[in-house]
Length: 357
Image (cartoon, rainbow, N blue to C red; front, side, top):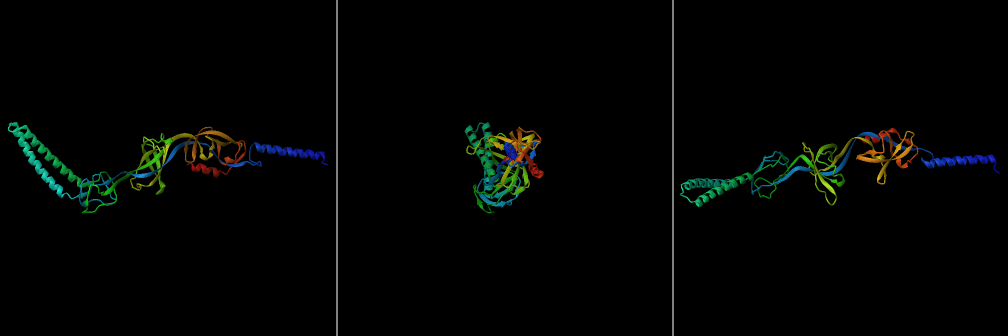
């Protein structure tokens, strides 16, 4: 038989154990231990919303050089890969036949000029009819037109650079007879270069002409190149709902080559004074968000928040959080509202602050 005093002690132990279990069920992890979390304080700082756009490097201007008339190559005045200036002579075609035809046309022009001069005198003395005078004037005009035509042909026999740039591979040789369809070489202007990419519809209103951005190139992984947005397409692609954008990047040393893969970070919105936390602190709640706030007694509480501008690894909190409040960035999945927490070593939290800079 169990003694009455012993029963009283057993009942007291059971009640104490039940009370302890009830406390653990109300909040905190099983076993009565506080959950270790990594937490940082919300800070007030500037934040920039950036959009990463994948694009391609293009030449500012590029053209296939072709002759305007057929002819034989007599002189080449450029080297492959040479930088040339606008108006610089690049190629000459044989001009012998055209020069002869020009000389004949100029002789005919002089003859038509003298005939027209005599016709004007005779017309004044009324010894020539108006019809004959008109014919003399027509012959003079046609002779002048022929002279202009052959002079233009002579100019066409000298191919000049239409703009400053770099000559590509030469595709003709001295002595070769070329036609109007023959490509002599490709001339490209690489300073500045253009970057083309596409912006999703939801960001279109924020991608504005004149916006600055930083460009990353796979060939130069440790460098950033500055550029300026200068074109936003007035219409969207109906298939993928994106708009074409173009930007220019200075390229004085010609290191950026057309065809290179480019990744640009466009600054869409800038806010100089915002409450900011690491993006890892955000807890998705359907279409809403929340954070776990740790108070001075190391108690965790769920707090609904409204996020604003986002940048890589950082997010602005528009509503629901004050500067200096501590939020959980690691371990919130194991934390219950009202539960006790312990803070992880400072170096873990410091990693989030360093990554944001």
